[in-house]
Image (cartoon, rainbow, N blue to C red; front, side):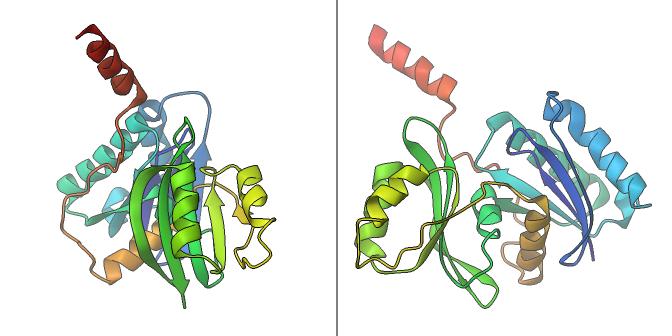
Length: 237
């Protein structure tokens, strides 16, 4: 099964082709241009370098967010357009799950993405024999609320942290002073690997989880511009 994975949830525009779970080739681009300008040429370049066309693709996988609101829309809508026009199945995977795939050791994984003002996008997974099981679905929380939740419900559990949503100094200040805690201060790169996106999409497809449902962007919170506008309107009332 040939898979085309597309990630436009961050400033990096990333595409990859996999054969089942095995990477054939990936391309990444951050040249200051918008994803609307770079995505289609990058996909075509990738297909050309692999001597393939979209007609050879058996599965489309899109990162549905959270992340850049505009970027997510571009990636999701492009995959949906390919899916509809060429009758190719398409699945969506959250950025937080893609991050979790950076961890390869069994245990609990705290996946976070910074969303400003001491808030983060957050999800909790448990990796067991290659399966990433969701303990807490993706959501938006304050950093303090996430840490309080982990301390209250997962105390003395071995946790790996991945992503940039919780400052490393805050983790160290909490867990370094707790002699009884077995929580790892294992802070892994926030790199969203498009190869992991393709692998997660392949697993979801073969397990037939929600296949056939329309993929939708996973925003989790309102854009900052909308929040500021609503605050201004409230102030005028």
